[in-house]
Every structure is written in structure tokens, then in C-alpha cells.
Image (cartoon, rainbow, N blue to C red; front, side, top):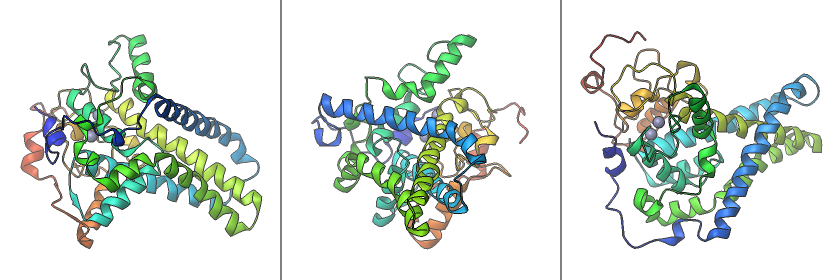
Length: 326
Ligand SMILES: [Zn+2]
Ligand SMILES: [Zn+2]
């Protein structure tokens, strides 16, 4: 079984010449990225925890909730359709404006620069749950304490690892695209846009500072925290639990209760069994909003050559045992 076709399929051979402009550059820039990352992980998380008591008191309006939901799903689909299914795996082709829009939408999720995200994820597939996987929960072994430690690693801690995936090796196709490379390098700019936009809308609509503050709290901080934890749960929870009806050489599982919040990404066992497939929820009743939207893009003529699943392909990836009941 191979997970490598998705890595290589539309990527030209890795270039030997380094393209330093694709990375964040020297050590100081790297540590700025680490600090930014630390802030954007911890601050929204504290906001999320604080949100629960606050929700009962002052300051949540329908506008705040709408901003939270809309911004959540823009960023989430930017990651799932854009960063993941399109840029990482090439599960469809996109016209130029859609390609750029997906790069920007995914950047609004504040999950790190696009090129880094893709390089890490391609490496994850290449080594899934084995030595070299940047975020396997099985890294420390299979005992319960080792798995607890491993889940923490897979969820968050891996991002602070010094060793970064070489981007020229894993994402040469993105590195050589000037516009995409620049969007990736402007990660901090997209972060600021993503955080200030809800506050600006909230302030203008209510014409008050309080409106701006509550919109920032819900539409920016709480939204980013929730999206972070849902996305990372794919790395941690979906590699530890869930049904495994399909053949994959790792521990990926299908986790139904994350399907709506993860925009269809928690059908993760199928994804590892067939990484380039544009639909992850291939079985009856498996919600996959990302696949639905890709279908709309296809109908509009913005996406083409979509790798939709077909019955033969799905059956060939099923385990022999009739273990699974959807
Ligand atoms: Zn995975
Ligand atoms: Zn993937």
C-alpha cells in the first residue's frame, strides 16, 4: 500500500537547489514564528475556556454567533478543501482564482503558513504512524501513559519541534508558484486579517466599541481556538480511535462525531486508504461538507478533474472481514 502517489502525483522532482524564499528564513524569523504560534494557540484556548461562563452573562449577540460560525466554516473549508484535499493531495484541479482563494481562506484558519502545512502533511502520509511521521500519537509506545503523552504530542506539541519538514523536498510544486509562496510567507498578515475582520464588522454594525470587543472575542478568539482543536483532533483522536473498515498501514480511524465540525475530515480511515480521493465520507450517511462544496465548484466550472470515489475503488480498499457496519 502506498501513500506516496498523493505526495508525488503532480509534484515535480524535488529540486536540489534550495529556495530560501519559501521558508521563513533565518533563526530569528523561525523563533518569531514559534512565538506567534505559541500566542495563537494559548490565547484563543484561554478565551475558549473563559467563554463558557461569559456566555451566561454579558456579551453574546446573534451577530457574534453568526460571525463565529461563518468565519469558522470559511477557515475550516479553506483548510480541508484548500490546504488538504487540493494543495496537499491534488484531489482536484482548480482554476487560478479558486486556487488563490483557497490559499487565502486556509490561511485565515491561523494554522501556520500554507507551504509548511502542506509539507508536514505530505510527510505525515509518507510515514503515517511510523518513524518520520511529524505527529503520530503512537510516538512514545502503546501503553496508556505513552499514548496519553503521544496524544498531547500529536495534538499540539509536535508544532514546536525544532526539526521542520524540508519544504523544497516535500512541496516543490508550491514553492515554485510565486503567488502561492507569497501568500504562505504572509502568514502573519492573514492572521491579523482573520482576527480583525470580525471585530471590524461587529464594531461597524453595532456602531460601538463593545460590539467590536464581543465580536473579536467570539468571532476571532473563540472561533480560532475551536477550529485549532478540531483540526488537531484529526491528528490525535482520529489516529487513536474510530472504526477502521478500510485498509491502511496506520492507525487512522473514522470518527463520526467529529464529521460536522471537521467539515468531513474525520472520515480519516478512508482518507489514509485512498489519500487522493476528493470525498472522505464515502459511505451512506457520512456527512462531508467539503466534498459537497467541491461538487459545487465543479458545477460552476471552477474545479475540474475531480477524483471522485467509485464503487470498485472503494471496494478494493475495504478490509476482507465484514467487521464494519456503518
Ligand atoms: Zn492522518
Ligand atoms: Zn491527508
